[in-house]
Image 1: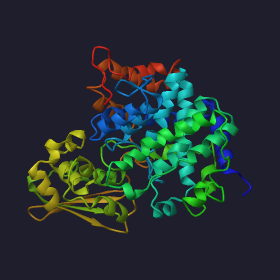
Image 2: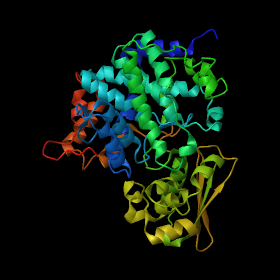
Image 3: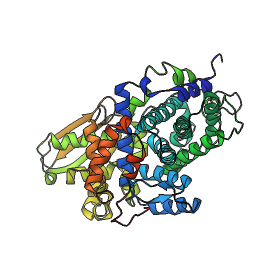
Image 4: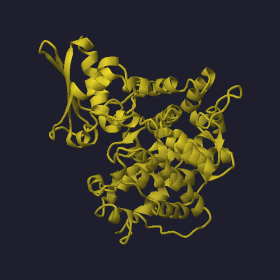
Amino acid sequence: MAENVTETLAGFAASLTLDAIPDRTRTACKALLLDALACALAGHQGEETAEMAALASALAQSKETSIIGGGHLSLAGATLLNGYLITAVTMCDTHRATLSHITPEVVPPMLAIAERDDVSGADLLTALAVGCEMTTRIGLGLDYPVFRKRGWHGPGVVGPFGAAAAVGRLRGFDAETMARAFGLAGSQSAGTFAAWGTPTVKFHQCRGALSGLMAALLAEQDFVATKQFLTAPDGGLYNTYSNGGKPELATGDLGKRWELERIALRLWPSASMVQGLITAMFDAVEKNDIATEDVAKVRIVMPKTPFEMHGIFAKYKAKFEALLSAHYIAAVILHDRALNLAQFEPARYDDPVLRRFAAEQVEVVADPSLAEAQAIAELITTDGRTVSAKCEHPRGAPENPVSYEDIANKFRTYAPGRLAPAQVEATLDAVAHLEDLKSARTLIDGLRPGESRKAQVA
Protein backbone atom coordinates (compact mmCIF):
# COMPACT_ATOMS: atom_id res chain seq x y z
CA MET A 1 0.00 0.00 0.00
CA ALA A 2 1.11 3.54 -0.65
CA GLU A 3 1.13 4.50 3.02
CA ASN A 4 3.23 2.71 5.62
CA VAL A 5 0.73 2.83 8.47
CA THR A 6 3.27 1.85 11.13
CA GLU A 7 5.63 4.68 10.19
CA THR A 8 2.77 7.17 9.88
CA LEU A 9 1.58 6.43 13.40
CA ALA A 10 5.15 6.37 14.71
CA GLY A 11 5.85 9.76 13.19
CA PHE A 12 2.76 11.20 14.85
CA ALA A 13 3.66 9.66 18.22
CA ALA A 14 7.23 10.93 18.08
CA SER A 15 6.38 14.47 17.06
CA LEU A 16 3.25 15.28 19.07
CA THR A 17 3.56 18.31 21.32
CA LEU A 18 1.35 19.48 24.15
CA ASP A 19 0.33 22.57 22.17
CA ALA A 20 -1.16 20.31 19.47
CA ILE A 21 -3.51 18.64 21.96
CA PRO A 22 -6.86 20.46 22.23
CA ASP A 23 -8.15 21.47 25.67
CA ARG A 24 -11.04 19.01 25.41
CA THR A 25 -8.62 16.17 24.70
CA ARG A 26 -6.38 17.21 27.58
CA THR A 27 -9.38 17.07 29.92
CA ALA A 28 -10.24 13.60 28.62
CA CYS A 29 -6.66 12.47 29.28
CA LYS A 30 -6.75 13.81 32.82
CA ALA A 31 -10.01 11.97 33.47
CA LEU A 32 -8.45 8.76 32.14
CA LEU A 33 -5.41 9.18 34.38
CA LEU A 34 -7.45 9.98 37.48
CA ASP A 35 -9.75 7.04 36.79
CA ALA A 36 -6.76 4.72 36.42
CA LEU A 37 -5.36 5.90 39.75
CA ALA A 38 -8.72 5.36 41.45
CA CYS A 39 -8.95 1.86 40.00
CA ALA A 40 -5.39 1.06 41.10
CA LEU A 41 -6.09 2.10 44.68
CA ALA A 42 -9.22 -0.06 44.65
CA GLY A 43 -7.19 -2.85 43.07
CA HIS A 44 -5.37 -3.54 46.33
CA GLN A 45 -8.62 -5.27 47.32
CA GLY A 46 -8.45 -7.62 44.34
CA GLU A 47 -8.66 -11.34 44.99
CA GLU A 48 -5.53 -12.16 43.04
CA THR A 49 -3.51 -9.01 43.77
CA ALA A 50 -1.26 -10.76 46.28
CA GLU A 51 -0.39 -13.43 43.71
CA MET A 52 0.53 -10.81 41.12
CA ALA A 53 2.52 -8.88 43.72
CA ALA A 54 4.54 -12.02 44.45
CA LEU A 55 5.35 -12.41 40.75
CA ALA A 56 6.22 -8.72 40.41
CA SER A 57 8.56 -8.93 43.41
CA ALA A 58 10.29 -11.96 41.93
CA LEU A 59 11.15 -10.21 38.64
CA ALA A 60 13.99 -8.27 40.25
CA GLN A 61 15.12 -7.31 43.71
CA SER A 62 15.54 -3.56 43.17
CA LYS A 63 13.00 -1.08 44.53
CA GLU A 64 13.37 2.10 42.49
CA THR A 65 9.82 2.42 41.12
CA SER A 66 6.62 3.33 42.99
CA ILE A 67 3.53 1.20 43.40
CA ILE A 68 0.29 3.21 43.29
CA GLY A 69 -0.91 3.18 46.89
CA GLY A 70 2.03 1.02 47.99
CA GLY A 71 5.78 0.82 48.30
CA HIS A 72 8.45 0.24 45.66
CA LEU A 73 9.47 -2.47 43.21
CA SER A 74 11.76 -2.76 40.21
CA LEU A 75 10.95 -0.96 36.97
CA ALA A 76 9.52 -4.15 35.48
CA GLY A 77 7.85 -5.32 38.68
CA ALA A 78 6.11 -2.01 39.33
CA THR A 79 4.90 -1.83 35.72
CA LEU A 80 3.43 -5.31 35.99
CA LEU A 81 1.80 -4.82 39.38
CA ASN A 82 0.45 -1.33 38.67
CA GLY A 83 -1.06 -2.67 35.45
CA TYR A 84 -2.80 -5.40 37.38
CA LEU A 85 -3.97 -3.04 40.12
CA ILE A 86 -5.75 -0.83 37.58
CA THR A 87 -7.76 -3.77 36.25
CA ALA A 88 -7.89 -5.98 39.37
CA VAL A 89 -11.44 -5.17 40.45
CA THR A 90 -12.92 -4.89 36.95
CA MET A 91 -13.59 -1.16 37.06
CA CYS A 92 -11.19 0.41 34.54
CA ASP A 93 -11.91 2.14 31.22
CA THR A 94 -12.96 0.42 27.99
CA HIS A 95 -12.60 1.46 24.38
CA ARG A 96 -15.91 -0.01 23.32
CA ALA A 97 -15.13 -0.11 19.60
CA THR A 98 -12.40 -2.67 20.28
CA LEU A 99 -13.55 -3.97 23.69
CA SER A 100 -10.09 -3.09 24.99
CA HIS A 101 -9.02 -1.60 28.29
CA ILE A 102 -6.47 1.14 27.63
CA THR A 103 -4.99 2.70 30.76
CA PRO A 104 -3.84 -0.57 32.41
CA GLU A 105 -1.32 -0.92 29.58
CA VAL A 106 -0.41 2.74 29.02
CA VAL A 107 -0.28 4.35 32.47
CA PRO A 108 2.05 1.99 34.43
CA PRO A 109 5.13 2.10 32.17
CA MET A 110 4.55 5.81 31.58
CA LEU A 111 4.56 6.53 35.33
CA ALA A 112 7.60 4.32 35.85
CA ILE A 113 9.71 6.17 33.28
CA ALA A 114 8.35 9.55 34.36
CA GLU A 115 9.46 8.84 37.92
CA ARG A 116 12.85 7.50 36.89
CA ASP A 117 13.63 10.39 34.55
CA ASP A 118 11.90 13.14 36.55
CA VAL A 119 9.94 14.47 33.56
CA SER A 120 7.57 17.43 33.63
CA GLY A 121 3.83 17.17 34.00
CA ALA A 122 3.46 18.55 30.48
CA ASP A 123 5.56 15.72 29.09
CA LEU A 124 3.57 13.20 31.12
CA LEU A 125 0.28 14.53 29.74
CA THR A 126 1.62 14.42 26.18
CA ALA A 127 2.84 10.85 26.63
CA LEU A 128 -0.53 9.81 27.99
CA ALA A 129 -2.29 11.27 24.97
CA VAL A 130 0.16 9.53 22.63
CA GLY A 131 -0.21 6.17 24.35
CA CYS A 132 -4.00 6.20 24.49
CA GLU A 133 -4.39 7.48 20.93
CA MET A 134 -2.02 4.87 19.50
CA THR A 135 -3.70 2.01 21.34
CA THR A 136 -7.20 2.96 20.21
CA ARG A 137 -6.26 3.77 16.62
CA ILE A 138 -4.24 0.62 16.07
CA GLY A 139 -7.20 -1.26 17.51
CA LEU A 140 -9.59 0.43 15.10
CA GLY A 141 -7.47 -0.73 12.18
CA LEU A 142 -7.94 -4.37 13.19
CA ASP A 143 -11.56 -4.54 11.93
CA TYR A 144 -12.76 -5.62 15.36
CA PRO A 145 -15.61 -8.01 14.41
CA VAL A 146 -13.17 -10.14 12.39
CA PHE A 147 -10.48 -9.86 15.07
CA ARG A 148 -12.95 -10.92 17.78
CA LYS A 149 -14.32 -13.80 15.73
CA ARG A 150 -10.82 -15.27 15.71
CA GLY A 151 -10.82 -15.22 19.51
CA TRP A 152 -8.36 -12.42 20.19
CA HIS A 153 -8.62 -10.24 23.30
CA GLY A 154 -7.69 -6.63 22.54
CA PRO A 155 -5.66 -5.38 25.55
CA GLY A 156 -2.82 -7.86 25.19
CA VAL A 157 -2.71 -7.39 21.42
CA VAL A 158 -2.90 -3.61 20.98
CA GLY A 159 -1.87 -2.55 24.49
CA PRO A 160 1.88 -3.06 23.94
CA PHE A 161 1.81 -0.48 21.14
CA GLY A 162 0.31 2.21 23.38
CA ALA A 163 2.69 1.42 26.20
CA ALA A 164 5.68 1.60 23.84
CA ALA A 165 4.40 4.88 22.38
CA ALA A 166 4.02 6.53 25.80
CA VAL A 167 7.49 5.43 26.92
CA GLY A 168 9.02 6.38 23.58
CA ARG A 169 7.50 9.85 23.78
CA LEU A 170 8.95 10.38 27.26
CA ARG A 171 12.35 9.19 26.04
CA GLY A 172 12.26 11.55 23.05
CA PHE A 173 12.22 8.90 20.32
CA ASP A 174 12.46 9.99 16.73
CA ALA A 175 10.04 8.48 14.20
CA GLU A 176 12.43 5.73 13.16
CA THR A 177 13.03 4.54 16.72
CA MET A 178 9.33 4.72 17.50
CA ALA A 179 8.52 2.57 14.46
CA ARG A 180 11.01 -0.06 15.63
CA ALA A 181 9.44 0.10 19.10
CA PHE A 182 6.10 -0.68 17.45
CA GLY A 183 7.69 -3.63 15.67
CA LEU A 184 8.99 -4.97 18.97
CA ALA A 185 5.65 -4.30 20.69
CA GLY A 186 3.74 -6.16 18.00
CA SER A 187 6.06 -9.13 18.29
CA GLN A 188 4.70 -9.58 21.83
CA SER A 189 1.01 -9.13 21.00
CA ALA A 190 -1.01 -11.96 22.54
CA GLY A 191 -4.11 -12.87 24.54
CA THR A 192 -7.33 -14.67 23.60
CA PHE A 193 -10.85 -15.07 24.94
CA ALA A 194 -10.03 -18.63 25.96
CA ALA A 195 -9.16 -16.92 29.24
CA TRP A 196 -12.69 -15.57 29.70
CA GLY A 197 -14.18 -16.22 33.12
CA THR A 198 -10.73 -16.43 34.74
CA PRO A 199 -8.37 -13.75 36.11
CA THR A 200 -6.08 -14.41 33.18
CA VAL A 201 -8.06 -11.89 31.13
CA LYS A 202 -6.71 -9.27 33.54
CA PHE A 203 -3.18 -10.60 33.17
CA HIS A 204 -3.42 -9.68 29.48
CA GLN A 205 -3.50 -6.00 30.47
CA CYS A 206 -0.51 -5.90 32.80
CA ARG A 207 1.53 -8.16 30.55
CA GLY A 208 0.77 -5.75 27.70
CA ALA A 209 2.12 -2.90 29.83
CA LEU A 210 5.35 -4.77 30.48
CA SER A 211 5.68 -5.78 26.83
CA GLY A 212 5.42 -2.17 25.72
CA LEU A 213 8.02 -1.08 28.27
CA MET A 214 10.45 -3.74 27.05
CA ALA A 215 9.76 -2.86 23.42
CA ALA A 216 10.58 0.81 23.94
CA LEU A 217 13.67 0.23 26.04
CA LEU A 218 15.01 -2.32 23.55
CA ALA A 219 14.31 -0.06 20.57
CA GLU A 220 16.28 2.65 22.39
CA GLN A 221 19.30 0.36 22.25
CA ASP A 222 19.09 0.39 18.42
CA PHE A 223 17.77 -3.17 18.34
CA VAL A 224 16.69 -3.95 14.79
CA ALA A 225 12.98 -4.54 14.19
CA THR A 226 10.58 -4.15 11.30
CA LYS A 227 9.15 -0.69 10.78
CA GLN A 228 6.14 -2.06 8.91
CA PHE A 229 4.71 -4.38 11.51
CA LEU A 230 1.05 -3.44 11.19
CA THR A 231 0.67 -4.15 7.48
CA ALA A 232 3.49 -6.63 6.82
CA PRO A 233 2.11 -9.25 4.37
CA ASP A 234 3.61 -12.17 6.27
CA GLY A 235 2.80 -11.96 9.98
CA GLY A 236 1.76 -8.32 10.20
CA LEU A 237 -0.85 -7.46 12.81
CA TYR A 238 -3.66 -6.65 10.40
CA ASN A 239 -3.05 -9.62 8.09
CA THR A 240 -2.53 -12.20 10.82
CA TYR A 241 -4.90 -11.15 13.60
CA SER A 242 -7.59 -10.02 11.16
CA ASN A 243 -8.35 -10.23 7.43
CA GLY A 244 -6.12 -7.35 6.38
CA GLY A 245 -7.97 -5.02 8.69
CA LYS A 246 -8.97 -1.46 7.93
CA PRO A 247 -5.66 0.39 8.24
CA GLU A 248 -7.20 3.58 6.91
CA LEU A 249 -9.14 3.85 10.18
CA ALA A 250 -5.88 3.90 12.11
CA THR A 251 -4.59 7.00 10.33
CA GLY A 252 -7.72 8.84 9.21
CA ASP A 253 -7.88 12.44 10.50
CA LEU A 254 -4.87 11.74 12.72
CA GLY A 255 -4.36 14.67 15.06
CA LYS A 256 -7.70 16.21 14.09
CA ARG A 257 -10.11 13.64 15.52
CA TRP A 258 -9.03 12.11 18.83
CA GLU A 259 -10.14 8.51 19.21
CA LEU A 260 -9.11 8.50 22.88
CA GLU A 261 -12.16 10.67 23.56
CA ARG A 262 -14.24 7.59 22.70
CA ILE A 263 -12.90 5.63 25.68
CA ALA A 264 -15.67 4.83 28.13
CA LEU A 265 -15.26 5.09 31.90
CA ARG A 266 -16.97 3.03 34.59
CA LEU A 267 -18.43 4.31 37.83
CA TRP A 268 -19.23 0.79 38.98
CA PRO A 269 -17.18 -2.39 39.30
CA SER A 270 -18.05 -5.29 36.98
CA ALA A 271 -17.47 -6.01 33.32
CA SER A 272 -17.84 -3.38 30.62
CA MET A 273 -20.60 -5.30 28.82
CA VAL A 274 -22.90 -5.19 31.86
CA GLN A 275 -22.64 -1.43 32.35
CA GLY A 276 -25.83 -1.07 30.29
CA LEU A 277 -27.60 -3.50 32.60
CA ILE A 278 -26.35 -1.57 35.64
CA THR A 279 -27.53 1.74 34.19
CA ALA A 280 -30.96 0.27 33.40
CA MET A 281 -31.31 -1.28 36.87
CA PHE A 282 -30.45 1.95 38.65
CA ASP A 283 -32.88 3.84 36.42
CA ALA A 284 -35.60 1.31 37.23
CA VAL A 285 -35.15 1.37 41.00
CA GLU A 286 -34.46 5.09 41.33
CA LYS A 287 -37.29 6.32 39.11
CA ASN A 288 -39.97 4.02 40.52
CA ASP A 289 -41.07 3.96 44.13
CA ILE A 290 -40.99 0.18 44.60
CA ALA A 291 -39.79 -1.53 47.76
CA THR A 292 -37.46 -4.48 47.33
CA GLU A 293 -39.88 -6.84 49.09
CA ASP A 294 -42.59 -5.93 46.57
CA VAL A 295 -40.54 -7.23 43.62
CA ALA A 296 -41.32 -10.84 42.75
CA LYS A 297 -39.04 -11.13 39.77
CA VAL A 298 -36.42 -9.19 37.80
CA ARG A 299 -36.14 -9.74 34.07
CA ILE A 300 -33.01 -8.54 32.31
CA VAL A 301 -32.87 -8.30 28.53
CA MET A 302 -29.39 -8.09 26.99
CA PRO A 303 -27.89 -8.20 23.50
CA LYS A 304 -26.70 -11.60 22.33
CA THR A 305 -22.97 -11.25 23.01
CA PRO A 306 -23.26 -9.77 26.53
CA PHE A 307 -25.85 -12.44 27.32
CA GLU A 308 -23.50 -15.21 26.24
CA MET A 309 -20.71 -13.76 28.38
CA HIS A 310 -22.65 -12.66 31.48
CA GLY A 311 -25.95 -14.51 31.52
CA ILE A 312 -24.22 -17.77 32.46
CA PHE A 313 -23.46 -17.07 36.11
CA ALA A 314 -26.84 -17.48 37.81
CA LYS A 315 -25.02 -19.62 40.37
CA TYR A 316 -21.76 -17.71 40.63
CA LYS A 317 -18.93 -19.27 42.63
CA ALA A 318 -16.97 -16.40 44.17
CA LYS A 319 -15.96 -12.78 43.72
CA PHE A 320 -14.75 -12.84 40.13
CA GLU A 321 -17.84 -14.64 38.85
CA ALA A 322 -20.03 -12.29 40.91
CA LEU A 323 -18.38 -9.37 39.12
CA LEU A 324 -19.33 -11.00 35.81
CA SER A 325 -22.80 -12.22 36.77
CA ALA A 326 -25.80 -10.36 35.35
CA HIS A 327 -27.98 -12.29 37.79
CA TYR A 328 -26.07 -11.23 40.89
CA ILE A 329 -25.60 -7.63 39.78
CA ALA A 330 -29.32 -7.18 39.16
CA ALA A 331 -30.16 -8.78 42.51
CA VAL A 332 -27.73 -6.73 44.59
CA ILE A 333 -28.69 -3.41 42.97
CA LEU A 334 -32.33 -4.15 43.80
CA HIS A 335 -31.53 -5.04 47.41
CA ASP A 336 -28.81 -2.50 48.20
CA ARG A 337 -29.57 0.35 45.76
CA ALA A 338 -25.77 0.60 45.48
CA LEU A 339 -22.91 -1.06 43.59
CA ASN A 340 -19.44 -0.58 44.99
CA LEU A 341 -16.71 -3.00 46.01
CA ALA A 342 -18.65 -3.66 49.22
CA GLN A 343 -21.22 -5.48 47.11
CA PHE A 344 -18.50 -7.84 45.88
CA GLU A 345 -17.13 -8.91 49.23
CA PRO A 346 -17.90 -12.43 50.51
CA ALA A 347 -20.10 -11.09 53.30
CA ARG A 348 -22.45 -9.74 50.63
CA TYR A 349 -22.31 -12.09 47.64
CA ASP A 350 -22.42 -15.16 49.90
CA ASP A 351 -25.59 -13.95 51.60
CA PRO A 352 -28.06 -16.85 51.10
CA VAL A 353 -30.95 -14.49 50.40
CA LEU A 354 -29.05 -12.81 47.58
CA ARG A 355 -27.75 -16.08 46.17
CA ARG A 356 -31.27 -17.53 46.09
CA PHE A 357 -32.78 -14.38 44.61
CA ALA A 358 -30.13 -14.23 41.87
CA ALA A 359 -30.59 -17.89 40.95
CA GLU A 360 -34.38 -18.13 41.22
CA GLN A 361 -35.89 -14.67 40.79
CA VAL A 362 -33.64 -13.02 38.21
CA GLU A 363 -34.22 -14.04 34.61
CA VAL A 364 -31.67 -13.01 32.00
CA VAL A 365 -32.60 -13.34 28.33
CA ALA A 366 -31.06 -12.38 25.02
CA ASP A 367 -32.59 -10.09 22.42
CA PRO A 368 -30.51 -10.02 19.21
CA SER A 369 -32.28 -6.84 18.11
CA LEU A 370 -30.63 -4.83 20.89
CA ALA A 371 -27.44 -2.94 20.13
CA GLU A 372 -24.40 -4.06 22.11
CA ALA A 373 -24.55 -1.27 24.69
CA GLN A 374 -28.31 -1.47 25.28
CA ALA A 375 -30.14 -3.29 28.06
CA ILE A 376 -33.62 -3.47 29.56
CA ALA A 377 -34.47 -4.01 33.22
CA GLU A 378 -38.00 -5.07 34.14
CA LEU A 379 -39.22 -5.25 37.73
CA ILE A 380 -42.30 -7.44 38.09
CA THR A 381 -44.14 -6.80 41.36
CA THR A 382 -46.02 -9.19 43.60
CA ASP A 383 -49.32 -7.60 42.50
CA GLY A 384 -48.58 -8.16 38.80
CA ARG A 385 -47.32 -4.73 37.75
CA THR A 386 -44.23 -4.32 35.57
CA VAL A 387 -41.99 -1.27 35.56
CA SER A 388 -39.04 -1.08 33.22
CA ALA A 389 -36.12 1.04 32.15
CA LYS A 390 -34.09 0.84 28.97
CA CYS A 391 -30.48 1.88 28.70
CA GLU A 392 -29.46 3.20 25.30
CA HIS A 393 -25.92 4.09 26.37
CA PRO A 394 -24.30 3.18 29.72
CA ARG A 395 -23.21 5.93 32.04
CA GLY A 396 -19.60 6.71 31.21
CA ALA A 397 -19.97 5.99 27.51
CA PRO A 398 -19.05 8.86 25.16
CA GLU A 399 -22.76 9.25 24.33
CA ASN A 400 -23.66 9.39 28.05
CA PRO A 401 -20.53 10.81 29.68
CA VAL A 402 -19.76 11.15 33.34
CA SER A 403 -18.31 14.40 34.61
CA TYR A 404 -14.76 14.97 35.75
CA GLU A 405 -16.18 15.47 39.24
CA ASP A 406 -17.78 12.00 39.04
CA ILE A 407 -14.31 10.55 38.49
CA ALA A 408 -12.91 12.69 41.30
CA ASN A 409 -15.56 11.25 43.60
CA LYS A 410 -14.63 7.75 42.44
CA PHE A 411 -11.05 8.52 43.47
CA ARG A 412 -12.24 9.84 46.83
CA THR A 413 -14.23 6.63 47.35
CA TYR A 414 -11.32 4.24 46.91
CA ALA A 415 -8.36 6.28 48.18
CA PRO A 416 -9.10 6.12 51.94
CA GLY A 417 -7.11 3.40 53.64
CA ARG A 418 -4.28 3.91 51.16
CA LEU A 419 -3.84 7.68 51.13
CA ALA A 420 -4.31 10.32 53.81
CA PRO A 421 -7.04 12.92 53.20
CA ALA A 422 -4.46 15.58 52.38
CA GLN A 423 -2.86 13.27 49.81
CA VAL A 424 -6.24 12.66 48.18
CA GLU A 425 -6.91 16.34 47.60
CA ALA A 426 -3.30 17.02 46.57
CA THR A 427 -3.53 14.26 43.95
CA LEU A 428 -6.77 15.63 42.60
CA ASP A 429 -5.17 19.05 42.28
CA ALA A 430 -2.01 17.64 40.65
CA VAL A 431 -3.98 15.76 37.98
CA ALA A 432 -6.24 18.73 37.30
CA HIS A 433 -3.19 20.94 36.70
CA LEU A 434 -0.92 18.26 35.28
CA GLU A 435 0.57 20.39 32.52
CA ASP A 436 1.73 22.94 35.11
CA LEU A 437 3.73 20.50 37.24
CA LYS A 438 7.47 21.03 37.02
CA SER A 439 8.03 17.43 38.03
CA ALA A 440 5.77 14.41 37.59
CA ARG A 441 7.26 13.12 40.84
CA THR A 442 5.02 15.61 42.64
CA LEU A 443 2.08 13.45 41.54
CA ILE A 444 3.79 10.06 41.92
CA ASP A 445 5.25 10.72 45.37
CA GLY A 446 1.81 11.66 46.62
CA LEU A 447 0.41 8.27 45.61
CA ARG A 448 2.43 6.36 48.19
CA PRO A 449 1.24 5.85 51.77
CA GLY A 450 2.75 8.28 54.26
CA GLU A 451 5.80 7.45 56.31
CA SER A 452 3.66 7.06 59.41
CA ARG A 453 1.86 4.14 57.82
CA LYS A 454 3.57 0.88 57.03
CA ALA A 455 3.83 0.78 53.24
CA GLN A 456 2.24 -2.23 51.64
CA VAL A 457 3.08 -3.55 48.17
CA ALA A 458 -0.33 -5.14 47.92
